[in-house]
Length: 461
Image 1 (cartoon, rainbow, N blue to C red):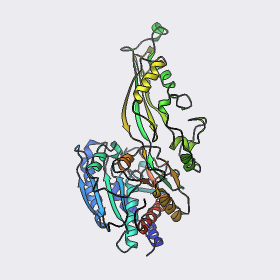
Image 2: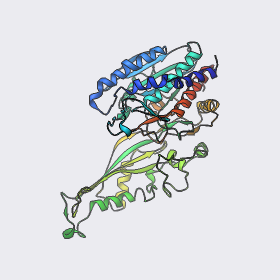
Image 3: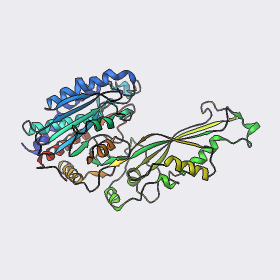
Image 4: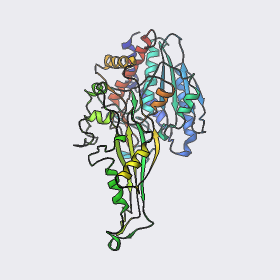
């Protein structure tokens, strides 16, 4: 059998309807990890759905209990030879809230519904559809090679990604020998665009910054006190403007990343950020000056105001409020120094006349990415181009957050993500969906990658 046969088998999986039948069964598990009453469903997804599926692929699997008593993990392994490469694959079976009753045309989030080129359902894009694509591609390669993959494969499935993967790092550290591999390759998040295959090498980090101005209890009449009482809301918005200006440009050096290297610029030189008609248009004159949209999104830091509160916006009183609060988020790339960031912000605000603004941080996650010199990057890009005829976009990192640092830092693996959704997929919202043409291409891309992995006589180094 040949590479072309493996790709044809993967393509037939969706054309025959078999893939969608499998995905519908998986979407039916109501695995909302943010819902504390879903513990049984989270476990059932691994025991009743994933373990039989891995057994059919000749994997041995076991459940690993969470150190903190949360949902378990599944570790599966297929071993063929100590001489061939070993790949570690990741997926998460948990989803966000189903948001029943909010989906277009009354669709049930716990069943897949095909409408035109879209397949709707909670988890279709994030992440049941994506790890199902990778498992189907493994099956296609195994069938084409007569029951062999040509490489060793390991798979870890977690059920807590949507609550921040609280135990993934601990589990991987405790089971690092079982998860030892030459390459980490997984799928989550969106492609650059629906029609361009994409590889990304890691993810930006993030840290939430809380700013609070607490001047007094209650409000005071704006006619009687206006002009003589400090307004916490006015103070807060002006304090924020010393951190990020009215065009989204960072004003404090401690918030900025290192200077962009020529290597990063070269990776992003042909990357165009072009929203579809379903997505918001890019803002004019927004973000760091001198950078392309791709560089701003994938190679720079951004400080976003996520929420602000003062007074009662629904029923505003003619009163000066006593409190004002804001939650900001810094998305940052590798190389940004976040140790001491809160202290730097606090000192900056004091220096600019805002000592009354309280600063604290919460919900931090790390930035990480594969070394640009890794030979696995070119190998993966060449494989995708051979399959699709398209040069994939190679991004230094995903714009959002994923637990990449667990695999790159704790396990020490080169990490390559091959996403199978697109920016307009409505993940985390009503009407989450995948696109049939993209899914078909994704199945062939992964079949090609897995076939080519089996052709390597030894791991790349």
